[in-house]
Structure formats: structure tokens, C-alpha cells
Amino acid sequence: MKQFVWIILGALSLGTIAQAASFDCGKASSKIEKLICSSPKLSALEDDFDKTYKAVQSNSSREEVQRLITDQRQWLKGARNACGDEACLTQAYSSRIEEIKPASGNVVTPLAKITTHELLAPVGHGYPEDISQINGDLVYSHYDNSGNRKDIVNFDFTSGRWFNWVEGKRDPKLVAQDSRYIVFHTPHSASFPIEVISQKTGASLSKVKLKSSVQQAFIDGDHLILFQASPAPPYGYRQAIAILELPSLKLIQETSIPGGTLISLHGNRIYTAYSANAAMDLMVYDHHFKELGRMKLPQPIEKVNFRCQPQIVQNENDRALLIANCGEMHVLNLKSLSVERSISRHSLFYSVALYKGLIFTTTEKQNGIMVFDMNSATEVAQFQIPASYLFIKGDVLLAAEAPVNRLKDSSWPMHVYRINADLIRSGEWKNQSIIEACSRTSQEIQNGGDIYEAVRVCGDSGINPVINSSNVPADVLPHAVNYAI
Image (cartoon, rainbow, N blue to C red; front, side, top):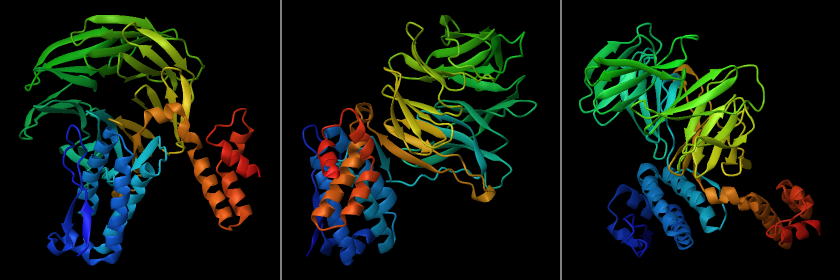
């Protein structure tokens, strides 16, 4: 009786990788097992998958094997075991083999597309609104199926799982949450209501009206700290703050700090900006509103005819990226409050995410992703991946396109990729498509294939600019010689 090798998805021991186990088709018990054992086609696919998986394991680091096992769990649960017929299983196995095959073929992949789960972020009717990232997950509001009220959804793009924070509310925006409370706000109403909901029971605990809309907020013990829209100049050069008691929302104190614009909240730091006569100061405060320091920001590198709201994207190790002037990027040292380096404005429309000192940003016309190195302030890569929004959780990049508003059939196209920062920096991956295409065509010529078609395919891979450069990489040189001959 034929046996199949299946992957043990248990945890790795300290010194060894989890080994495979087998089951006898005569003892197959689940519906999936019986379906596989009864189909020669599925049996062959399972064998192909097993060989590919073993090859990947043997050529992977311990960290990569752990990641492979995690992805395998998700694939088994979300793809293979969700099937009910042979066609579905065939598609599931074929997709999984193609997904992990590059690792076994030594193909370097700076952004490896993850296809173990289908991203189905709910958008209901119309567009997602008030999009933010909390604990790595996407959080946004969208109209529910009735088209009259809105839900606030939490979407984990690394697994495809999602849940609603609140449902059926009028224009809700999540502004703060902890293990006890959910606080949401209606910024578009004349009364600017804010409401506290119990995380445990889902019951509304209190609701009050505010003088102005809430920009951002955080929970500090039993206090809710609100940063509200400030009056217009000349009175608005201070950031308005309200401190409320939780869960009663009783007002404890109203105060303000210098800086008419709240830029960002990160950890225990508050960033505000004050601008006058084209100059801008960045001010930093702690959660008790004690000033930690301030710095003058650089004058715009390139003049534009309109002002843009500055934005800070936090990085590890006391560094951050300040976005100003509709696309200029300044790498900040938060310890010394100084600008380490600047990158000229490259796009009027952008979304930015950071990973291991790399800056991922969209381009103006939604035709790709540009990557800059924070250390050198130089562009290190471009990827032809359409994206309007970029988010990173762990080492997973979410590239989301512009939402499509079709009323009852709205959608939000998005894809996820595993990031290899070392490969992106080194640039070694850039010639991989050339090597693959020219190697394949050389083999076709040896097998008696059409030489003109082979030359065309190798040429279309991009080998000509590499050959014409002053320094042909060693890995491309043999293919360049063959191409010339």
C-alpha cells in the first residue's frame, strides 16, 4: 500500500528540525486523506510537494525552516484542509509547490509573495476610512452591509484573520484601546461624540460630547489623553489636550503644549510641530507633557505651491523618518534631535513603511514601490508592484492598491510579501531574472530549439544594459558571452 510523507508541524527542538512521519492509506481517516489516497493525480502532486518541501528544508537556515513550518500550518488549515473536492486540492497543492519552489532552486527573492492565504479584508459598501496600524494590524472603518452604519475592523494581514472592534455605529473612528476598553470617536459630527466600550462584554460604558474633533489619543492607566483640533492662527500655535477619567469620561483637565500640529504619538513620546514664516520646529514631549527637546527642521529642498501635513514614521534604535513638503524625507536621530541625512522629494502621493533601516515608499502614479537605505539615503531597489498603501508587520509587507468602490461589490486588492532586507541591500537579486532566462534559452539551443527566439528571450530579460555597463557582474558574464556568440 502506498504511503505518503507528511510534515510534522510540531515545534522545533533546540538541536534538530522536526522530522517527517507517514501514514498508511489503508488507515486514512479524514476526508482529505481519503480523497488524496483515491486519486493518482493528487498522489503524484503530494509526492512532488514532499520532494520540494524536503529540498527547501535541507537548503534553509533554522530561522527559514521555522518560518516555513509556520506558513505550512497556515496552508494546511486555510487552503488544503478547507477543500472539498479534487479540483480544489489540485489548485492548493500546485500553488503551494510553486510558492516554495524558488527556495529549493536557489533563486534569490528579495520580496517573496505569500500565497498561503487569500486576503479578504472586508470593506462592505464604499471605501475604507481612517486607516491606521495598531499592534501591526490594519484598523479602519467601513460601511456595513446595510450601507447606513459603519464597523471598525481589525485586519491581520499576516494571517488573513479579522474581527470587528465595534459594529453598526455612525462614522466611528478607533482612537484608543487597551485590554479593558475600546474608545471610538465620531469626528464628522457637530457634537464630536466619544464613547467607551468594554473589551470584555462589548457594552457601552459612557459617552460624552466634545468641543472639537480628536486627532489622536492614548490610554495612560485610568486616564484617556485626547489631542484635539486646535483653533486657527493666530491663537492656534498650541496643541489642545483634554485629560478624561476612564471609564466615566469625566473631564479632569484641559491644557495645551506649544506646537500647533500634532505629528505623531510613538511609545512614550509626543511629537508636535510649530511653523512660522516657512520655518518649522519639531518638539518632543513625554506622556506627562514635559519637553524633551526641540529642533529646527530643514528648509524645503524643493519649493511647492502648497503645504503638506508632516508625518513621522518611527524606526528602531532611536531613529525615525520625517516626511515633509509632500514627499521630502529626513532621517532623524531622536537621541540628539538632529537630521542625519535628507532625501529629495520624489512623489506627491506616498505611503511609507520601515524595515531594518530600509524605507519602502509608493510612487505617485501607483506603478511600483521604491526602496531607500536610511544609512546612505540612496535608492537601492524598485519593484513593479502596484500599491497605494504600504504596511509592515514583522517581516511581512502588505502592498494594498486603491480600494475599488462598487457599492455592494466593493473590494480592496492587496498582496503580501516576505522581505529579505539583506538581499535588497546587496542588489544580488537584480540579475537573477537575466541568469534564469539566458540559462533556459541556452539549454533550449543545445536541445535544438529556435536560436532566434532564444536570443530574443535572453535579450528581453535585460541583459543588454548589463553588458554595456562598465563592470559586468561575474554571475552574468558567462551568459553575456553566450549571448554575444
